[in-house]
Image (tube, rainbow, N blue to C red; front, side, top):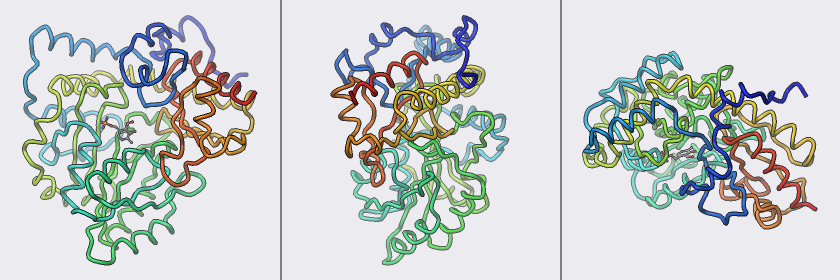
Length: 394
Ligand SMILES: Cc1ncc(COP(=O)(O)O)c(C=O)c1O
């Protein structure tokens, strides 16, 4: 099959996803590898099975050797992200004066929601969507309102406008929590779609908070458009981070960004929020953004090969599963409704196949009968995961 990447010593050496053995991965103590017993193959939570990019390892090692483990200072994260955005997305719109460091993307989302809404206010999400959107907004006392994506995983503007119309009445301060690119579908929203969002948000008085954590994961050939760059995006608030692109979730740091018309909102962020990110985390994220571009490209090439491999494996072993892996993520959203495993196929795959995937129903309305699979691993483990899924049907 010419669509499947060739496996040669050179291709293995160049692919960060093929550098750690299963035995090494099982020695990890992070969530992906510790939440399930040893006989379960984990392809769920968004951690990547890669060694760190060399510039990141070097930066952390230098900091540790120097004892540079104090509090974070300055705007170095914003400067590194601004340079990355210029080079990668041709976007020159990051003004360090309109940024703030936050502990991580989800806590940053919470801080942005606090700035532009109050208790009980509606937070609109495009389900199926990253489950913590429900958890964090709910825990903050906001009311999550669903605006389902259309069947192809794109924003349904008729639905969105209808929901905006409903939440805008009654004196509330509604927020649209947009996921761009979208998790779990990997949908990369176009400039026209994002401008449409901005027009609707303006018309209905809805504030837009956009989670752009997956932006660095968008491969060449697809175009990531920062929400703050589109006409009308000036009132937006965004969260960006190196954590998904370089597997740095345990090295806590992220950046909140405000468009020019939202600068006053961001300026109200309490000073103590900036005490949350780890200084070592910022050092790691900055090294990734500044010097980790080649490594990221190598990972993206590996993920692209895994997407094609997955489609081929599903066609051969689980033809009733439908999947068109999106480009803006290393996660795959699998429609398993044709398998006859009910609303929670992940439970059957776990119990009978000993493979852990995310249950689709945790992603809100539209998720029942789906599972989310993590493709940031080796082709061997993707192959083994699909084999295990197929045995659950025996
Ligand atoms: C869309 C999205 N937002 C946020 C996060 C979590 O980011 P953080 O660990 O920086 O809170 C993830 C992790 O997978 C994600 O997919």
